[in-house]
Image (cartoon, rainbow, N blue to C red; front, side, top):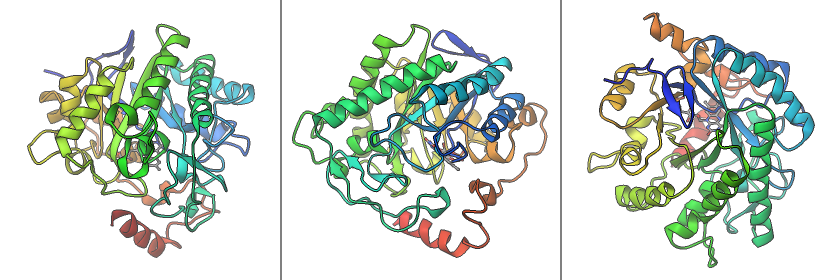
Length: 374
Ligand SMILES: Cc1cc2nc3c(=O)[nH]c(=O)nc-3n(C[C@H](O)[C@H](O)[C@H](O)COP(=O)(O)O)c2cc1C
């Protein structure tokens, strides 16, 4: 029987247990994207709190069109690498694996006045003022040409090589939650007539190319993971047309990629509501069936009976914990010692209270979530 505290392999490295910190944007780097002391304290607390693996917040990959938010950290230049290095040294000193999440915003950047995306589609939703990039609608993106796609791929490869220099154990490619790589996967956001649009293999081609190029260039032991989801931050209820059949087609394509784990995200309503199909199957369960690599499940898995059920029924190998980890950086130690967990405090969602106060903007936020759920 699998338990939360089994030592578990990720490629040739071993995680001390099955709990991971889910990637969470904190917009607390400096204006040049260099990691701050605040970030070091944030990550070290999870390592000291017993997490086997930490996946970082989304990190931007190039200076062209990838950036999502002001004060987002990058892995583009030597100063950013050196900033991350002092964090990875401390975190890995606890025996915790540290994975850098690499992220390209595509059309839902909050940092750029001009964006690029697979096709010229006006993004749903609007900017979230608490991330510091202003409010109102997103700009209408330009469609990427082949040179832009090459810039994206080169950016991911360069950022992964920088992650290795910075002492990370691996990278996770963010192809979930409505950002660029997910925009390529999603039919209504990708109307391309070239080899990057149309069929499932074509819509996944950019990810295939990134993973293949990465694998050729990073070291043998370096972990390359991938994160996918159906829902999007600006379209929370979106589900793939064709349900589990579409999931199978997408996962068959992913099974051919040289990745070392797959992370199935459920950002808003949780694993139970967002990743299951009417036929009783689940996205993470089908991934376990079709892929030979470990599967990370996510979405309100601080409900420990559900988390154990996923391990027992072969629907996950790792459990990524988001908001409950924000409330309890020592989540793993508390679970191990059967201690009570602190409830999640929504005011901690907004790392910079001078930009945005939860209490002051509560009504706005409720309206915003309603719109994203529509
Ligand atoms: C404040 C915050 C920031 C987030 N930023 C990211 C991110 O940078 N990358 C990402 O893939 N998911 C991000 N997420 C989604 C989480 O990784 C996770 O999917 C979500 O919180 C659901 O897990 P939970 O129910 O355990 O909180 C973020 C979530 C929160 C609450």
